[in-house]
Image (tube, rainbow over all chains, first blue to last red; front, top):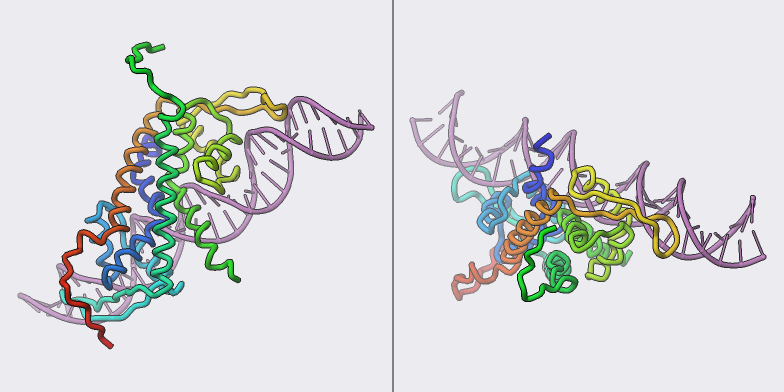
Length: 132
Length: 132
DNA sequence: CATAAATGTCTTGCGGTGCAAGGTAATAGC
DNA sequence: GCTATTACCTTGCACCGCAAGACATTTATG
């Protein structure tokens, strides 16, 4: 019961990832071929923690099915199961470019809405001391 | 048929709104009391088009149930059904503050990932050799 | 009163997707 | 063999934006 409201922070992060997680993977793949397990670490380093394999692998599969990436296998350098590396296709590169633009436009619009204090509420130079 | 691929743009917008649409409403309500129908117009003005009533009303109901906002009825100035105005509660103001911080942190992390050309810029000047 | 238009509110059902949990497989060391 | 590590993949749930449409209230027209 107390949890229902305070779960909101991690909960929000999950929701925020929607619509942009695929773009992050695309961007990371654009740098160089990457394998699934690597994304979890890479995204954590970038400050996007809590992105788990349960999100990554299905998404990678979706993107491959959509023709945005393709893949090849290579033995692991660390010993263990062989890695499946993903590369950008042309369609993937195009989607990344489009997505970057969409993301940029979107964040500007949201940030403006969130920081709306300027246009409708200009503060007087005096300090407003009165409380109700 | 030509629509199938370009549907991804609107599709992405939908997903991007998750996790931040409630914050936008909270911010708008923070300025002054607002009624549901008004949000559609306000968000469109802010550049967030395509946000429809089917998103707004259920969300408003959820937020009221969560105690983030409360509401009162007032007759419409334009003639028609009475409006239901929403106001911020203390919990709502707190959620807004937390959410703004989360949003800010999140966008920085994503933007860094999307524009990652700098940090791995240490790539040697030689070009990659294609295998196969 | 009946009808319609305008203004708003609210509900239903669908679809996409992040994620916890759990399973599979390959390699290395004991 | 057995266990640990690395890595991949699947299932099922839960959440939420949204199109579509039902419903309520006021004003206007006749």
